[in-house]
Image (cartoon, rainbow, N blue to C red; front, side, top):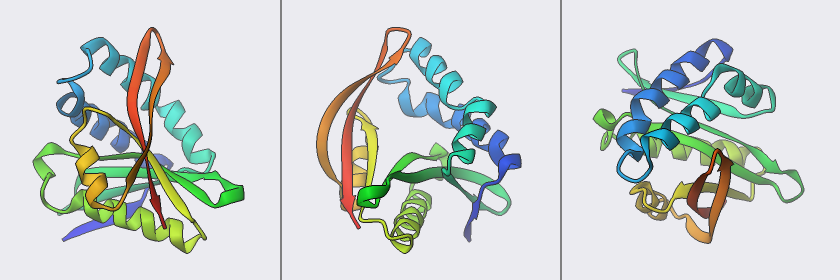
Length: 164
């Protein structure tokens, strides 16, 4: 049985470790090793994750038989319009097809709705197969963006949105 738990500060190293294990398999086909390392160092260092937690990001960790399989994080980003953003959702490749991602995204949707959310947005790399997962979950492509993340690197994403 897959269980979800809300992450606390002491769980942040688990999130970093999962990202280190998931990202190379997820992104190495379409972003350079240098960009991959830069993004992991930028987005998954303990200080950055702690800052996100302190700013109200909710992190969920999925596990089965005490093995952590994936995580998600989201937050309210547009209080005026009750808009939420799914910042991260990643599942170990060995756990793909077990329903972990679906469980995580459904929980994020339910929590956002329970808190009055009207929309849930996310960014996904345009080459990432996860785009199809989001389309199946009801998300629509809202726009195409190229985000400068520094060091000469860009994230070439779709912004996708789900009406809650």
